[in-house]
Image (cartoon, rainbow over all chains, first blue to last red; front, side, top):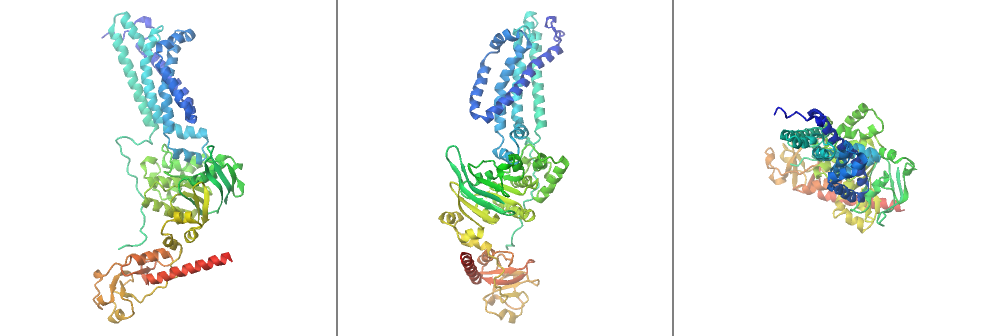
Amino acid sequence: MSRFFDIPSDLQHSWAGLIGLHMREALLPVAAGLLLALPIAQLCGRFRWLYPPVLGMTTVLYAVPSLAFFVVLIDYTGQTELTVMIPLALYSLVVLVPAIVDGVRSVPDETLAAATAMGFGPVRRYLQVQLPIAAPAIIAGLRVATASSISLVSVGALIGNQGALGNLLAAAQKYDRPELAVNAVLTMAVLAILCDALLVGLRVLLTPWMPRAGSRPKPAPRREGITPEGAVR
Amino acid sequence: MIRIDSVTKRYPDGTVAVDRLSLDIPDRSITVLVGPSGCGKTTTLRMINRMVEPSEGTILLDGEDTRRQPVTTLRRSMGYVIQNAGLFQHRTIVDNIATVPRMLGWGKQRARERAAELMERVGLDPALAGRYPYQLSGGQQQRVGVARALAADPPVLLMDEPFSAVDPVVRKGLQDELLRIQDELGKTIVFVTHDIDEAIKLGTMVAVLREGGRLAQYAPPAELLASPADGFVEDFLGADRGIRGLSFVPSAALELTTDAVIPADADAGRIAAGKATHLLVTDADGRPLGWAERDELTAGDIRTDRLRSYGRPFVPGVDSLRVALDCAVLSPVGWAVAVDDSGRVTGVVSQQTIGEAIRAAHAAGRAEDEKVAG
């Protein structure tokens, strides 16, 4: 157990350093995916015929094994973090695009009509009405994308030790130190759970307007009393 | 004034939603567009603030083509109330109401003060200001919708079936509230509904549209009920338009009699006087207690607990002839009880007398028509 955190020197990082690297390699692609997914989803919302082919294409991309991606990308980006992060960003699109499209579509027609009638232009309407109301759906998508990204980073170990915590898996085999593999798996799981908790917290913070499960809304004082027109006895 | 000038809306697939419609919508009054579904009433409303662009024709606002100003400016000058309120679920009530003022560049403080003032006006508890829409009942949400539409004090209010999704009791409250607010503010309101009773209750003018977006009749509600233009309008008005038309005839001219009204402490002479078979007994203040047959009454020993119900009283001059007739129909003896504002009996009136008043009103209506025709 004493050697649990004793990382072989050829990995060139401490345990904490590997965590930092892992987070960067996992979260940057999700952030990039989000930036890419927002305009794609907006286009899919505006031109409805675009959505099925886009959905099909992202799904096909998801079916491509990450190794195949690496093989293609290595010619261009070499054995770098970028080679790991590009496929991860594309994978996150599969989750994020539908999440945003469905979230934006879930805004009731009356709400949209009311916004238009009040003189919201399309951009203002998207930023101030559709996106905030879609926030819970988007965050739900981010949770899935983040968790999967954190676990997928480890595949980077296969291309010149770019797998951050995943490199520990290879090292465990190489040095016959199974505790390093346990370390890698546990650390990644804890990171995934922590990130998930942060995202849930973010959602709670962003959506005070959502009915909370378990806490029933206080009955609002009613003032709809109608005075009877005439006394009926 | 809003002038809709031979406006047509044709969709790319060839459907004609509105067909050469012309309407002059008077200022500071409620104009109701009513008709069955598919008659183009909502399309017409949405062409006024250009959420739908007409295919042909023009819409003039105070003489100026609505296409001559930027569309967002036009829309911000018109309040819009929609079915189910269409509130922004992610904003508090006060921020919902303050939306348009904020867009117009008002300071946050001023916009919120204005919102608070409007909550008061539409009858919302100020305690709701910080709540979110999901925490309000349907009727309360609709009140917020009205307050939000009024926030920047626009001269025009467009209302698209605003009260259709709430239950009848709440709807009646909202309608009464709208009439009260309109009395205070005098907006130019265009109101869309499929409910002819709502149209007749709220409208100063009512435009009945038929399928295919053609105007069937445009008239004040009383005229609509008295002389529908054709079979379609007549069908749409429903079976009892004669009785409903009495809502527009005042009851002030009804001849009341006090012969049949006696105080509870009446003496034998008073009871014996007059010809009526039934007498209305009142308390010392003159408030009605109930009816009794003359023979049942003994001077000095009138059993007030044995009296028959007097139904519901009406206030002459305030209530319509329809209310008076209803009171007479509800009365077990066929006489309606008239009271003043404080509930004291001013007299009673028989179904027969009310019937005569209805005939007189018809005669007056005919004379009016002839005068207009001549």
